[in-house]
Image 1 (cartoon, rainbow, N blue to C red):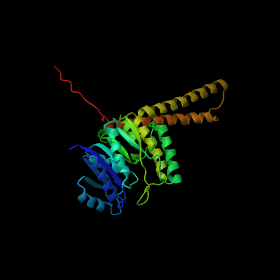
Image 2: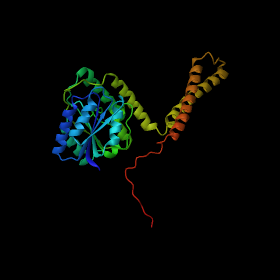
Image 3: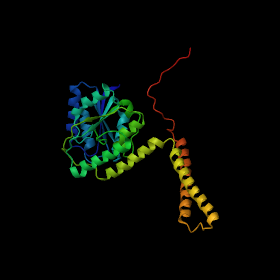
Image 4: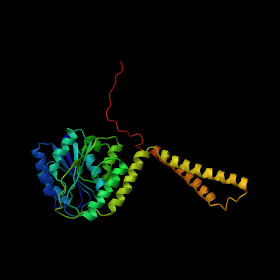
Length: 317
């Protein structure tokens, strides 16, 4: 049965906050008469999180639980939860109570009644450490906006809402959960909105993320941009640059050979000769890399997986 709402909660060592979070979600959804489910994914917690989920499932029939054998990361947790979700709207939130379930109705309304494919939360007022989280986050999001072209102030916010066909059409892996709006846009979902949401101070536990997420996030963004543009046509990138580099090196070589016959100079004593030779070799390697990447791409199982938004059947008379 298709529910109104699926609320996805990835978690790692959050046993103290889960009872309060579940009670809050249930209160909001019951008050607005949503047919809903909560999908909690225990990402290999080492505390009592899974036991708490078990206990809560006895109290709340709407709760589903998924447990990983070990810690795989937030992206893996979200990907599995998206597969298991049965709601026409899917809302993700963190388990640490910094995301407020009171935002659920308006997020739901923006998807159902305002026609957004994806709505991302914006924690305009934050209660994190200004030096270790706020300032790096602003810089990080500024770079994201510049590279991706998606005008979101807080792309990494855990509080997001999705239309069902968005989460069923994308795959989240590695640490790509930070860039789900980018992945969704590349899949053809263009109506991406933003909502200012309440950010609450952490009540239990400690943050699970460090400085390395900003460096890894920047590299992941470059990977997504490259794969999205050239994933099914790698020769267009490697072949283009390989050809340009080879032609540049070949042109310099022709110039040097012509100069030798005209001015009787020595080729091997000129630095330009070695630059040209290196450029030609690199160009050839780029071109061959493009061929190999094209073979891999053509052999991939998902090479013809295209997202069809709507299909009409035309019966021939």
